[in-house]
Image 1: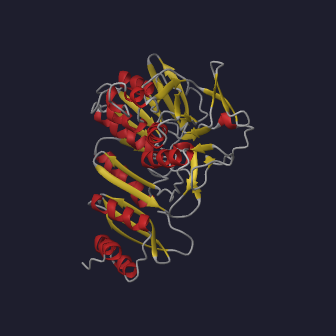
Image 2 (image 1 turned 30 degrees about the vertical axis):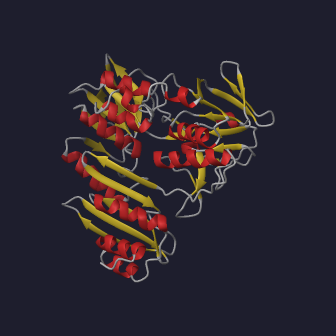
Image 3 (image 1 turned 30 degrees about the horizontal axis):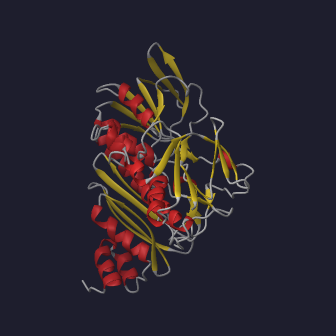
Length: 416
């Protein structure tokens, strides 16, 4: 009987535990999370803040005694160290847990810029359920809220804060919103959209310090302006939880390097989710794709390989889809182009619509879409199937809105 140990109780860890139970019913499955909560989805926290769901709506599984019934042992603990020789994990309470096969699905943690005052009460992240509770307590209708960071996570939080009817200001160090998901055209379009909805957006702006004036937080900006706030929400980035892997021999770059079976550089140790740097379907490079669909698929594939069911992983597709105050944006793959590639775009500035396509040889390798939800599935299909475009490449360069016709003919043989 194999002894399986999973570190991390997010989507990757939970799906891995459930998959192991299916493919190896006799194995021992232990899942360790470091929060005193039922396993939940971080991506559901904004829905809780927007009061679309309660706390239980963030939970990954809702059946009574779901994990007990499956024979999955859930424990709370923080990992201090991994001994790959002894196949043992040391926890912060002094205990240790052994394993035959290990899955590291420890996710990421937030990082705050090295700015004075970031440790003051009222400066919060939005990463854990406890963070969301603290934000909800302060983000009352009419309260002044400053959001630091307008990346993917920041814009998800923006949507939730706006739903709470706060007086919202967004500060981004870069020259546009969503700098790692949108080019300048798309990022500036989203900024104008947010401003039209009553959100103040400051780009090319750095916070130099945070202080207290009575009950108010005061943010000092690089240009000399100061802002008062009842709440500051920091969404300035995350880093994978890999500190406990020092001296283990496990190869770590941006994340834990894994092969196409989600195995690390050390036998019997696998990694999945935000902590894993795995194959990218489009580029063939090793990338960290910190999105829930990738984490879920990682968990399933890793578990099958842990149980001895050889299951190659075809690679993840870098894809983000975001709704910002009603404007849907999406980015795919190498949206900023590849060396020697070709590109096309269509812009409707007044209508808040934008489409950009990137090609390498005869393939679609990247795309941006703004205000065009009907193209999301088609772009994904063309990129995941990696189908040659043939005559459709030239047609799409002339008119990128012909994506649906290209998809139907290239993948289904249907001539539109």
